[in-house]
Every structure is written in C-alpha cells, then in structure tokens.
Length: 268
Image (cartoon, rainbow, N blue to C red; front, top):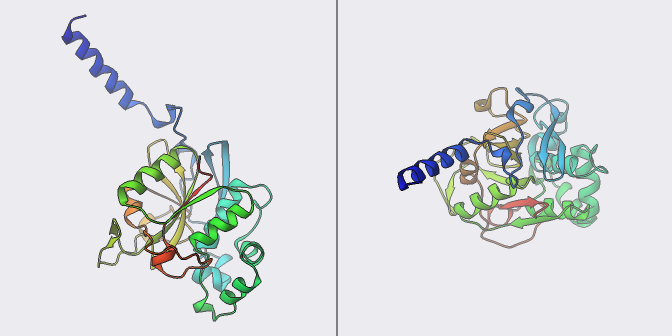
C-alpha cells in the first residue's frame, strides 16, 4: 500500500472512531437520552441511570414542590439534604426509602452527634444551615459509601477529574454559586442560572450524547419541563462551582471559603 492509500485508510479510521457513540467504549458508562424522562417538573421521581455496577435508581426531590415545600426547612435550605438523600437512594438498599426529613433528623444527628446537630437546628429557621460538602461526605462514609472530598481545584483539573469520574459510572455532588469563576476568581456579575445564592446538586452521570445528567431539587425557568433532571456540560457547570480557600471542617455550611468543592462518590 503506497503512502496515499495508507493516509486515506488512517483518515477513514479516525472518522469512524469519532462517529461512534460514547456508550461503545469499555471505559465509559453512559445512559441513553431516550431512556430518561422527557419531562420532570414533578414533586419527586425515580430516575434510572447506568452506573459502574449496573442500573442505579435515584429518587430526586423537589424542595419547592408540594408536599416537600410544606416543610419550611426544606423550602428554605433543603437542597443539600435532598441531594444527600438522592445519593443514598441510588447507592444503598437500607436507606433507599428515606425521605429528606428522615435523613436530616435521624442520619445527620447520628453521624454528627447531638451537640453539633442541636447547635444548627435550635437556631431560628432562617439561620439554620444546610449540611455541607464535608458533612455529606461524612454521612456517606458512615453508611459504607466511599467518597473523596475535593476542596481546591482549577477549572481544568475539575473538568478532567469530574468527567473521568462520571465516565466511570459514579456520581459527583457539587456546590454551585450565583457567580461564575475561573480558577477561584469570581465574576462580579450575579447569574442565577444554577443558584440563587449557593446550591447543592448531584451529577448523576453522562448521556450517550455527552451531556451531564443533573439531579436538581430547585426550579429554574430556563429549564422548562426539565426540572428534577436538567442537562448541562462539565465545562459549563464547573464555572459555577466554588474552590475552597480554607480547610475548616464544618458539618453545616459555613461560607464559601470552607464549604465549597465537590464530592466524588465511590471513587475508583
């Protein structure tokens, strides 16, 4: 075969590889878009997502939808405990039927201890804080789910690590901000695309088209009928995430300095 034929064959091979869907690669786990809900503007729902050990069924809660919004704490501060409950539903059998209220009142108290738990929940409602990224990782570890809490990151390192983790078939819990950032430098412009202030969500996996499947307890007008499940890219969502500047370990949110970052669930 002369060099022109070899070059043509190589080019054709590259084209064929590029045209294959992600789900054919042995090291990438994806979920077909066709299997995901076409609409998800509901109080709660169970969504099946392909994972590293098979299909996982995640229950996603809408904190601002009845009946959940009747709980004042969930309506005001419930994104983190809703996200934690979603992870527990997909990774455990024992806690699969827990609701956010039971996770807050039983599991948080058991793992953090009565003194820390009471210190948060004896405050006025407006001053009570959501469970932090550190607190989420502690609760998951306590029930046998391995985690890695990543506090500091550059946008590039987060994009690489999160995408690799999602491809492995495992989820990532994130803290989003109402300002974009690049390597920890935040824009002065407020944008409420993913958070009115600060907001916790779960990245459940990747679709077969390369989109991130986001479990979200909040309502966003821009997402139309897609509410409990929203879609984005790793590149976009990382811009809204919060690198920590402090290593303080607090079980409840104590500010962006120490309560940002992301949690890799069941890291390989």
